[in-house]
Length: 217
Image (cartoon, rainbow, N blue to C red; front, side):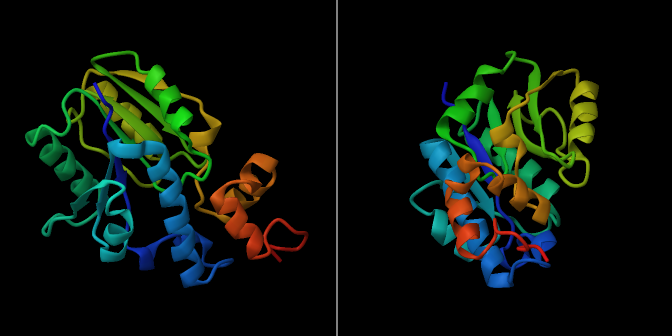
């Protein structure tokens, strides 16, 4: 069965707030769309974008199924839980679902094949922890067995929630999924290697002057 991939994307004008000290608002929005394009390319026709933002929906139209956030459910986690219910109810999602962050500059199709290969099977959840304790990727097999808990230190919260739901928990180490772009340190990490410099996000950040001595002063 095809593995559907749910990609939540916030309002562009709220994107990448922790990069405000080094990037202007328009630059943060551009970076958000660049990394989203990278993730969409890796996901291919399996991509499902969940967003409240008209510009994001327009950008992703034709590249992904679009789900719009619904009123009366404030916050990312209730919106994701509702989206999972809707996708299950509509038969778009059946036995598995991968939830993937939209700011993963290194992700490729082979990256997603690797996490899919790590799936232990029914009754399990496979997670990739970000460098700051978040959850950059979560493969639910099956979905809908516990409420998601994205936010600060979400990886540990997801491990506990999945365990409490009786699911086997598998932690997957994957550098291409572990690195997101939330902080200036993440930018430094991306640009510290040739592979990162060669990504679409890397090219953009280099064009802004990052990657040179004193760029963060």
